[in-house]
Image (cartoon, rainbow, N blue to C red; front, top):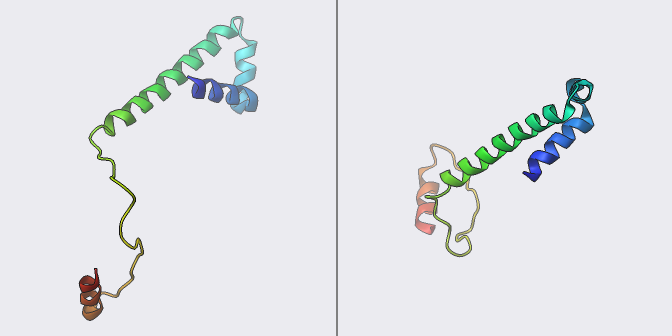
Length: 89
């Protein structure tokens, strides 16, 4: 909810497309602002919930990462270099 409030506050501060002027020119600016905030809360909450659901089956790595962690460049025709690297690791 705090992220949604921050984003709506940023929209009101930056005033893109004169949205602040349109909201404040209305007879009931609280309703327009509330509806905008409600839409942001629903959208951000839904994306957070979807991210959490998609991450349920992911396994967490155990311990620190192993191996040298370096990229090795090789050309397509360099078979001997590939064998040497394979034997080394």
